[in-house]
Length: 151
Image (cartoon, rainbow, N blue to C red; front, side):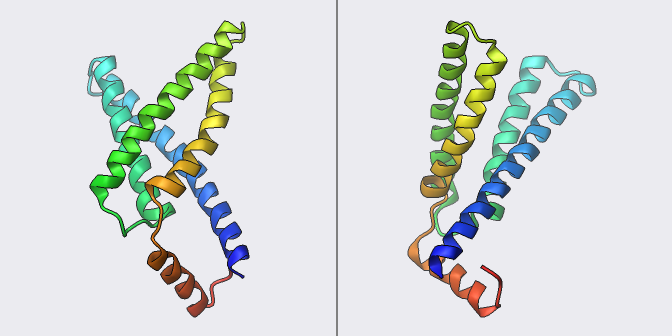
């Protein structure tokens, strides 16, 4: 039963993770456009602001909605998340650069990087950044069984 619960939970979390990714992308673009076109901010400043806000949106939606990670401190998790984001950024750049060296269009490199990084960042965030302690895992399982929620 726990095996079925874990597989269903992982699928649901991955689906939410992808949805959160789209919401984050939308936040980033809309805030960028609003900042440049309406507020008349410098493009680099606007892009920086929209990027930071989108990172915070992504982090908080994953922490509280997707992974429901309440047992570890916010500061520790955000620090881990930001350090990992920097590392994954470097992987992103390396993949895009490799694609261009191999004479592929940079968009092809970005598509490959996105596919690779969605999986990598999901696994890292699930098992490192937002990992649950055993008590929290058992509590969630107990509540699902208690309230007869399908698992």
